Length: 160
Figure 1: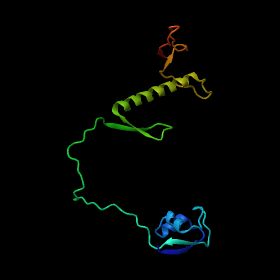
Figure 2: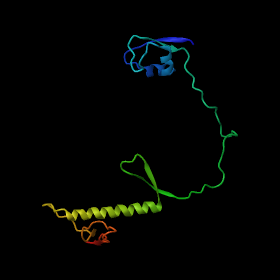
Figure 3: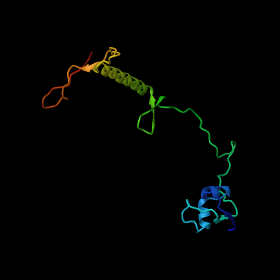
Figure 4: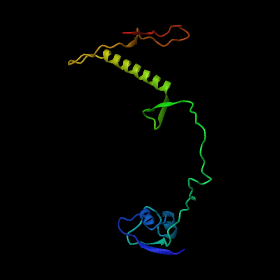
């Protein structure tokens, strides 16, 4: 293999040198046993570089009238229509929702807002303003969860 030499200058990195000369870092490392750590090169070092740029094989070209191109004939049927995209806090993913799921989510959000408005009524009013009254659901009394031994159940929520 024919090689060219390159003198390392201030600010050079192995990646930059390889890119500027049409080669790769592994090729430069293979030609330069002086380099023990790819992240450490010194100004003034004489590095050997491949004389010809490395060639990355490309796939063969294909054209629209090529026989290898395929087209889908007929209709594509979707089982469910997706109508909304949501992000769940703490999750790296997005969720897609169908119409019934989106409706259920909106109802749940409305219910949670209503409960949050109720908690405003439980807080003592600030001296400057009072919390507005709102219709909310709350239990009649705080009771333990139902158990099979006692047979008691939780109270049903009522409008306040």
